[in-house]
Image (cartoon, rainbow, N blue to C red; front, side):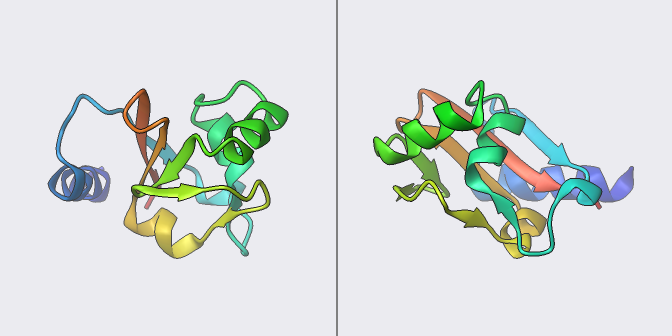
Length: 102
């Protein structure tokens, strides 16, 4: 429990506390090569389905740590998930911080 609060505190220091939900992913569900962005959008409830997530990515509406991602085949690395990342749709319309449970 202590590690989880430290990681959450780190995300708040990095990105500020804008009432943004912090979603922690179980390491057991994350492939060794990283998490496909379409699945990550679905798991964080920013998209209802992988096809919708792919459409949002291709339309240029998805940002990972402030950078626009336009390839539906993009994979979020384990390093980014361990460190913590911010996913957003259309800038600040919908945002969440994503990290791997420790």
